[in-house]
Image (cartoon, rainbow, N blue to C red; front, side, top):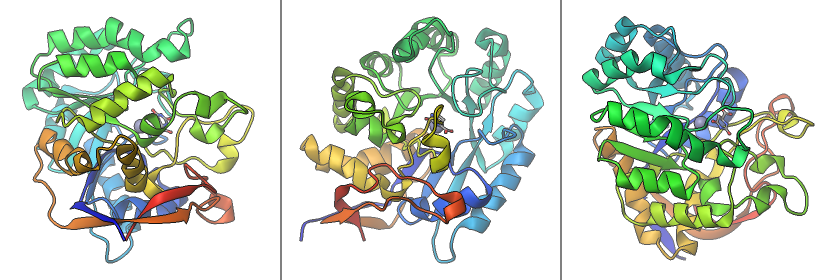
Length: 343
Ligand code: DOR
Ligand code: ZN
């Protein structure tokens, strides 16, 4: 049987929530990935080092015994973040970055930043401390078409941030457009991007054609085919600026299958399998290891992992849902077949 063995990977963009959802999802990530960059958009958001340390403890408590998993914590940037907190974060070995959500851009982003220029002194401090800035790159202007919000953010905010802070390490999270790929490619080595499995596998027809599919709804929204092709090319092209970040974002099924459903695809149950499918379709399985296990660690200046994970060519059916009845989470590709299975 065909197998693929790679160095144990890292997920450089992950939502695990807390409480019962955390307990339901964490083993899925911990059995495949050695480390994951944990997003701070809880309610209330994780804005201080003290909160990040408490959240880290909660995550570690939830990891099943026998699995070796390290959460890499991030802080949620707000207009009230202080320079002292940035210094504290820089000195804390468990905090690896700040996350910038434009206010109102996505799930639990109300406390995000409304005026990006107003927080430039904070970005200056991050640059000085060499703390990476992770950006949800979408404008929040109601008048801007949802399919244009990433492209417009590049022109109205990202270009200016990168010019003003030439040494700030920036990850443009979950890139979804040709324009974002181009921006990252053209930028200096201090700017990189994560790419999700859903944006490699689907275009917007998978969201909207023949019926609306709420489990394919995430932000930034899935775009047209030409953008998907640009993302596949970037992910499989061996460029260290592009690395794995699932943006696995669990929501209760009841909150997605409703008149106004939440944004987020739950992909942690089969993250590597989904990426393997995308890379195999592009005839680039040989490029998966560096994308999943080397480039992200290098960008975050972490040692590459030891140990390996093995995927087997083996068709299996993804369950309809994970979790107890009260915490039912519908995974990406629910009730569908996947061609790879991790051992
Ligand atoms: O689809 C998304 N879900 N995009 C985000 O940016 C946030 C995430 C979430 O937290 O649910
Ligand atoms: Zn996210």
